[in-house]
Length: 396
Image (cartoon, rainbow, N blue to C red; front, side, top):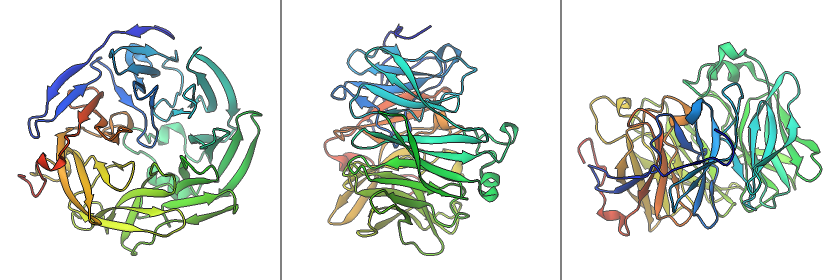
C-alpha cells in the first residue's frame, strides 16, 4: 500500500466485564496498531482525528485515524528495512506537520500534501533520541547519544536488552536545538550521561525536561530541566535516598511536571507514589498508592490515569492489570478507581499501554495486546467517577 490509501473502519464496541465501561476498539488488523508515546499528543482537527502507528502490510507507518468515520488514512510508506521512530512522532501545534526520526535523521511530514522533508542527519558514532517541538513552533529539541553498544547487544524496545550496560558506559550525550526555518542546530547541553526523554514545555518555549536514562535506582537523578533563558540544567524533585521517580511529563499548563515512582525496589509493594512539581522546584506534591504503575498521565493535577502492570507482576492478585483513575479532592486523591482492565503484556514498547487522557478528559486512550496483537482502545470516563469499582485489595 502507499500514502493516501484508506482502510475502512475497524471499530468494535465492547463492554469491560469488571467496570461495565464502554470501550471503543479502534483497530482490529492482525498486526500491532498503537498510539503515540504517552508524552506526545496526537489529536488534531478539533479532536476528530488522531495520529497513530501501525505495522499493517509488514511495515511500520504513520496513519491518521478519523474518529468520526473510523477510517485509517496511510500517511507514510516506509518499508521494514527503514528504522522509523513511529511511536515517537510529534505533531506540531499548527497541526500541519509531523516530525519524526527515520534512519537516524529528522524529517517532517506535511499532512495536507503528505510530502516529507529532511531536517537533520546524525553524525557517525551517534544516534538520535526522541524529539519535541517548542511551544512557539520554531525549534526542535532532541538528544544525540554516543553509540556504546552494537545493535546485536541492545534491544531497548523489546525487553530493555542493554539498558543497564548503556547507562554504565556513560555515553557522551548532547541536547540540541534545531531551528526549523534555517535547519541550523546548536548544542544546549552536553555531558557523559545517557540523556533521554527530551520534552519541550507545551507553553514555555525556553523550558525543556530531560532525564538521565537507565535503571532509576542506579542513575544519580532522573528528572532534569534545561532553562534556555538561564542557560543551565538542574535536577527537579526532592526525594528520600530510597525513593526513585521518573516517566516525567509536562502538565497542560507547561509549568508543572507529573511523575510516578517507587521506594527501595520495584518488587516492594509499599512506598509507590505519584506526584507533580513546578519546574522551579516549588509546589512538590507526593501521594502514595499500593501498586506500581508503568506510566501515568494527566492534563492537570485534578485527574490522573495510570496503567498498573501486567497481571503476572504480583502473583495471585487480580485487577492490577487495569486502567486506574485518581481524583483529587481537598488536596488528597481518592481511588484508584478501575475504569477497565487492559490485560496488556508490556512485552515491547509498541504494546505498552501508555494511557493518555483525551484533551476534554472524557476518555482514556490506550494500547493493549489483550487479544494477541496491539490495538488501540478508547474508554469512556463516566460523569461520576466514583460509580466505578474502587481498587481496595486483590478482590475489589
